[in-house]
Amino acid sequence: MYIVLEGIDGAGKSTQTQLLEQYLTKKGYNTKKIVEPTTSSIGKLIRQQLTNPESTNDINQQILTLLFAADRLTLKKEINEAKNTKEKIIISDRSFYSSICYQNNPTITPEWVRLVNQHAPRPDLTILLDLTEKEAIKRCDKEEVFENTDFLEKTRKNYLNLLKTEEHIEVIDATQTLQEIQEKIIKTINEKLGL
Ligand code: TYD
Image (cartoon, protein in one colour):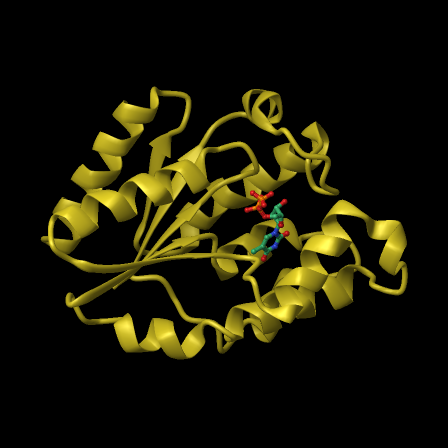
């Protein structure tokens, strides 16, 4: 299984992926937590660009989009081995849906983002942790290029729009307590995947 947590910066994805991994491991599943951007050399270049864009000013939004797409292909083999089996569960903090929602700007069409992500693994289940950009920005502690209210507002809309076209996405209100969110995630997974 390939289960993904998505949402704007500050939604609580990293905490909840960790809690979910602990829960499923305790239940006896062979679990693996992954994070995008990854720790590959491409992922490192992306993080450098996000925290310090001036240091690599030859990277524009189109190149960044290609880097995100290339970075996630480094995970493909492992994810494909786990997909459609219940023996191994991969829990991922972000997926190609992040590119669809974040790399949505006037210099790039959504069709092109989808095209360059054509070979990215498709999640078996996606949990969208949803909250307003104002709530989210209060929780952001780092200075990264995408962490501003206007951008996150647009990105949140893009996530909510995904619900109209994509299958297997469940929305959870991310303003609830950690424990309430965790319980809802577990309930969703149990219902959807029959774990
Ligand atoms: P994030 O999950 O926020 O990492 P961290 O917790 O270390 O800040 O990811 C970093 C940023 O990258 C975040 O602002 C979202 C952005 N991002 C994209 O724009 N496109 C993508 O495809 C991915 C995976 C992330």
